[in-house]
Image 1 (spheres, one colour):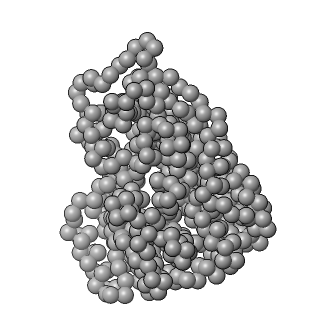
Image 2: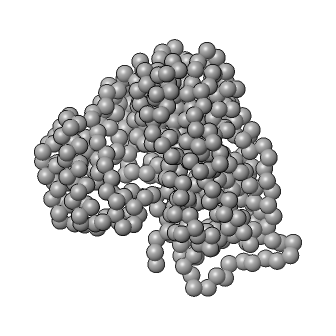
Image 3: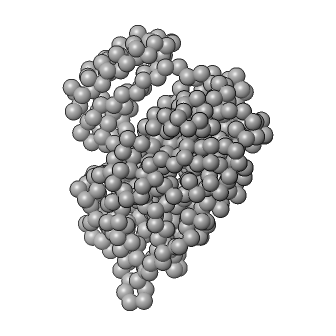
Length: 446
């Protein structure tokens, strides 16, 4: 039995790996698990701008309604927007159609429960068991018992109003650059920042789905950095295709990644007495500079394996309210159940306004050690068998770095890649060592 779910739902090349047939069948299984035992339940379905979203949305709607469950379609909406609307509408759960920061040809689906949380590993395994069952004996109601579809016309307005409620900030006099990645926040982010009074420079806000994440967005912060410098803006914000990530840029055009956002907002929350247990939850990928900043500012760090779902699991089990990843998934659990790029941008601008300091000055509370990340393409998502040559290459690098650095090698949970990260004092040396490990991985596993 093959594994369908990765660390962030199911992903693949749309209409080849992620077919309409697969999506229909897996949606029936997921909907049954989420809604069984409920009378007249309904689900929320949203999507990013990818062309294949329409095709997959049809399969998802068919899968849900075939079980007698109603559907609210919210159109193009960010992942955190869908999570919020599930709770706001009182739905039993929902499905988001997106492959996040992946290229156009990819797509994916994520299931959410009634609380707006992504499903657990155990729940996803149960869905896979239903999917692979030889006999589909799930309910098939007929007549008036078949589910109906209800387009929600004010989905964006509901979400914008909520964000303004939980992040009240007057941005009059501020100039902000927004890179919307031609994705799910193409309309929401500019609308919100304009309503808060900012002068807004908008980049990559096309909704036709052809250029989502293409040389723009959170994986290409240099785009917004150049615009910040040329326009004299106070800050810039880069989102990804489904709007759950944020990479910021300060007033000098320097990148402010998730580690910096955690440090700046964590310090601010601590000073206001709003950081539960004075603790931030992050992953093993966080820069050692964040550890040093935490020690200096008097808050604790708890580290999980890579993936925002693992950050969230630790936050829930430990009753923490703030955490995230270097990649820009930042979770303000008091306000939403998943990483939320727009919410993170608003919270960061609140710090700017309340402390009346430029982002470049706030960023100075943390110094990053040089960190190099390289990828090796492998056969499939999660493919990383134990290999003596790879182990030897990693041990050799660790020995060279000693206590002044570290090596982290792990398979991606969303793409057929093995990620190699080295951290230390000499960036040039790190690049050479990382390339050596990548070459060994390619020789052994490609």
